[in-house]
Length: 395
Figure 1 (cartoon, rainbow, N blue to C red):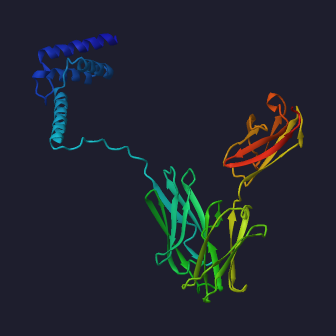
Figure 2 (figure 1 turned 135 degrees about the horizontal axis):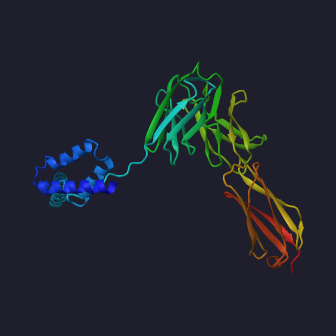
Figure 3 (figure 1 turned 90 degrees about the vertical axis):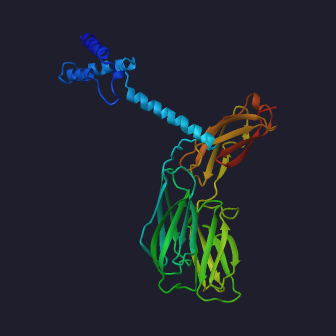
């Protein structure tokens, strides 16, 4: 039935075309036979889909030509050609398409309080929307515009970043302080009030630029003295969590009664994880001040085995512990080499949540044919450790 209706409409439209050719009509007038078919459709004698399919068929077969659209298309093509020719005559470059826009990066920053006093810590929280990579630079400026804190923070994958800054001697002016963060050219600011009630209450004050550090970072130690003693330096002493001396240096005090020094985190004397104490002493012990910072420790691997002498067929169990374990790598990899340095076996082990791991080796076979020291090399992230096995089951 649908095919009969469709055919009837086509015939009716074709008759209309033969009676009044659309090409003879004005570009701005609708032929009467088209209006008649439209009325036929409006009165409900044919369905929407049948009428639409019939019109589409006539247009696709170019039986029914929409001359105004063709004219506009031709004019548009002609204008493009004339534009290209004019650019060529004027020696102008070809037009380029607009570059694909990247997601807009937005940065926000805030503090946990609107105002602070001496001894407080500033908790900073920020967000980089549409974060991909790179660090955020943070600057805290005093009311005079001088920088009192400078730091670089790496946001999490969701763009969130936080940090904590103790208020020390560099905060010597009362008034409005500004926090400025910058990421890929995008800048955000926030302000807070600081009241210095009478300035430094003690004879000396000392602080660090951050509350915690990782290996390789720089500690900026700053301070201020109440009274200036010409020729007297400030001794800066760092003690580890076990009470052992890490470093001691002497820093000159400037004419504005301030002092500062920098220290690199890590090294042979700074390996232990925990709270480190900085003491600044100005001449005598009664002119001293202390501050602390946290250090995550230096990661290293300790290894041991269940046997001292390894015989042919022995089940050797290697146990290990990753100190300052921080989940930077998912697995522990190991390689066993013969006394001549040839590869014997290799594998991987997944550490437990406390940083311990273990794996086993069966000694013997063609690759264990020589007596001597077999080296077990273990790697985790960028850390490497070795254990020597004394094998006595070979030739």
